Length: 205
Image 1 (cartoon, rainbow, N blue to C red):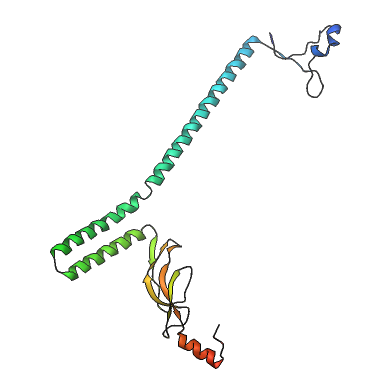
Image 2 (cartoon, rainbow, N blue to C red; image 1 turned 30 degrees about the vertical axis):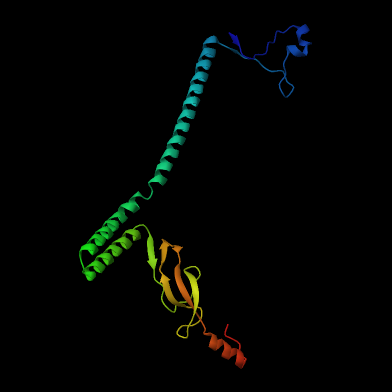
């Protein structure tokens, strides 16, 4: 039998008087020892070794998984736009062919039709990935979330604070504006402001 922490009840009285002879637990009670058969002891040692090996193997597998996930993530971000560019390449090819045709032909209408068709294909390809173009109507109220004011333009045709000219169309990616439309915003003519000041009328809010 192999002692593994067993209490010996046949301890000599002289040994009982020595504090070092009887180790105590944190609670102040003498610790107990248990005798284990050699066969069972060896079995426990084998199990301990087995679990240690498993723990090391699992730790190595987790580390390998981390490296794999990191590599796959880097690959994903590196080639995330691959399909987008595949859809855009035909439009690039059409534009190149249009330029070649323009150098050899004087048919402006055919050239314009080709460019218009290419633009249509390009817009269709972008819409597949959620990118859409939004129109801005003249007379529409200025919206800072959708419009960017390039300048103020004096006019009597549209109410003050409305769009009177569109210089560049806006784009949305799904529901998010990624480029606002570039516009000019209506402003009352200076002559009208002077007339109101002279008459003492307060300008409308």
